Image (cartoon, rainbow, N blue to C red; front, side, top):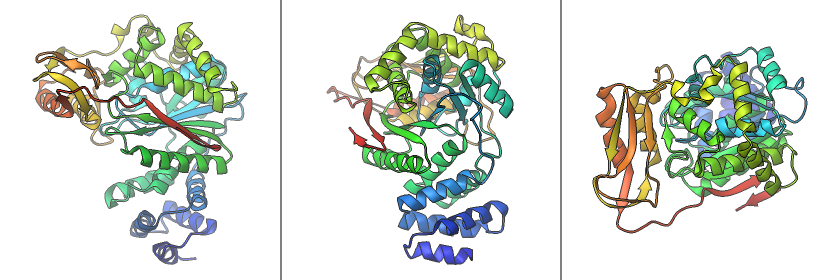
Length: 440
C-alpha cells in the first residue's frame, strides 16, 4: 500500500477503505508519511468529501492513534459534553455539576481557549489552587468520589488530531465537515464516556455560521458516535451573541457561580438547564426531556449543583471559599464603561469581535503559548433587542493594561449594530439531532 495511491483515489472521488485510512493515519503519526502527502489528502477530502462510513473509519483510526481512556472502574453510564466553541459559553461549569448532582457521573477532558473562543481549563484555573492536570488514577478517583471531574487532555490522547489540525490550519483545509467531525469525535471517543451531548453553536461567534451547516455537522457527528457504539445527542444553539453576559475567565466563573446560586436568569441558565436535561436523557437517567429539565432545575434551585461544584473544586485543590465570596477570584485594576454612541435598538452583535475585544484586554490567546490574564475581560449590559439611549453603558471593561484598551473598545463598538427598529429575536435552541432523526 502506498500513500500516493490513497491520495489519487480520493482525488478521483472514490471512497477509501478502512484499511487505507488506518494505514495513512498510522503512517502520518509515525512519520513514514510526509506532511506534504497528508496535506494533499486533506485537500482531496475538502474537495470530494467522505461518506459516513469513511468519516467513521477516519475517526476511529484517529481515536486509536494514541492512548484511550478506560472509564470502566467508574460505576454507571458516564456522560460527556462538548461545545464547538463560543463566546460567554460557560455552560460546562453549570451543566456538569447539575448532571453529577442528579447521579450521573461526568468525566470530562477539556481544552484551552484559542482566538475568540474561551477554554474551560482557563476558566477553572482562575480559581486559586485548582488543578487541571491530574494523573489518570486521580481523575478516576475524583469521579468515583465526587461524581465529577474536569481535567486537561493527556498529551498522548489522539496525537493524529493534533498533527492533522496543525496541518489543516496552514493549508486552508479547516472548513470540511468530515474533517471537523472526525477531529471532535475522535477526542470524545478516546476519552471513554458512554454517552455524549454535543452543543453545536451556530451564528457569528461560531465555527459553523449557518443553521443548515450546523445541522449537517451535528448529523455527521451523531452518526459517527452511533457507529462507534456511543449514545450521542447534538443540540444546535445560538451564538449570534454571547451566551452569557461575562466574557473573560474569572468573570465567567463568577457568572456560573451566580447561576448555580439561583440568583441569575437569562440565556446562560436556560441553555445550561436544557443541556443538562439532554445529558440526563442521553445517559438514560430519565425517560423524557421534560423530566430531565425538571431534575436539572431542582438540582439548581436546591443548591445541590453548587455543592457538587464545590466538591470538585475541593477535590482538585481549589479554594472552595470562592463559592461564598466571588471577590476572591482574580480581579482587574480598573473598570471602564463603554457607552453607546447613538440611540435605538441593538439590532445585531458580531460575536467573534466581542471575543476578540476580550482577547485584546489579555483574556485570550492569539497563539497557544500566550499567557492570559484571568482577571480581565468584559461584562455585557445589553443584548439583541434591547433599547439603548446615547450614553447608555453597553459593557463594563475589566482592565489591567491600558495599552490594549482602546483597540478592544473600538473592536467592541464595531461589533454592535444599533438601528431604529427593534429586530426579530432568534431562538436560543434551534433543534436536536439523535440517532432517531432531526428534531426542530
